[in-house]
Image: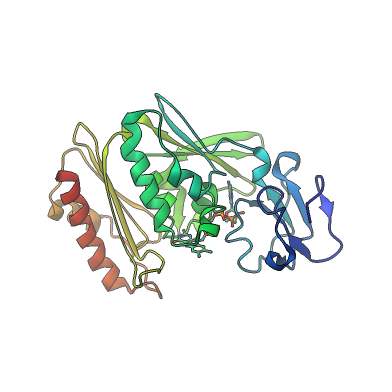
Length: 296
Ligand SMILES: Cc1cc2nc3c(=O)[nH]c(=O)nc-3n(C[C@H](O)[C@H](O)[C@H](O)COP(=O)(O)OP(=O)(O)OC[C@H]3O[C@@H](n4cnc5c(N)ncnc54)[C@H](O)[C@@H]3O)c2cc1C
């Protein structure tokens, strides 16, 4: 089933078939969303209550969405996944994990960023099917503690660009996720892209991730970067509900970094992916490993 024009109304439960990437799916793969009765390309719709922006749908189609009555498909924007110039890199909200992981920069100086981006993409332990549809914007906006794009964007001093009704704004990616599943989006606001400044993209980077099981969700993720002036940024995600960013004007010792971490009094998550004490201990250990790699 291919969706029709704007606001096509389905008589009863929609059999969700996204306009962009899912329209060729066979019936056996379709997913019932019991409250959704309409589906529209996002380019042609005006936001109203009950709407949800549809990225790859890997979350939206994975469980009931009681408040959602219409899906607005972002694939209709047809944005270029990744664009770059001498000032930096822009990643469209609709860029998939697969597209970002295989992106290679034209500017050789951005290679360290591309390597970290690929590692972050692979930190989402989904199948190739998930990687081929899950989007950068969806990952940021779902705002799970284990969101690897949140880690990447925060470490790189990224800026998220948000478009609301008649107003656009940008904000540091590190401030966008405010808690487990919570973020700074206003009702109806759309995250259009993630901007990463050139100054961060050539920095040396390091990455560590731990899960309780080989294919488990990240329980601790620590990413770091050190630029040519020795400014160092270390970001903790997955063990904490929101990113914890540590900044140093010169390379810190592990003890200094852990002291800076403790000064922020992070709350550690305690759930099936790992208890709080283990996550706190592993966060400290991974910070030390990231700093050692940045120094090597
Ligand atoms: C096997 C598996 C493993 C997973 N592992 C992880 C993991 O390790 N870490 C993790 O973080 N997630 C994980 N997920 C959850 C999810 O797949 C990812 O977070 C994914 O990146 C979500 O992107 P999406 O494009 O599919 O989002 P969607 O399902 O399309 O949307 C997610 C939410 O974000 C909103 N949204 C989407 N795009 C935008 C936008 N541009 N602007 C505003 N709102 C928007 C939607 O309305 C919805 O509320 C996993 C899922 C599966 C199935």
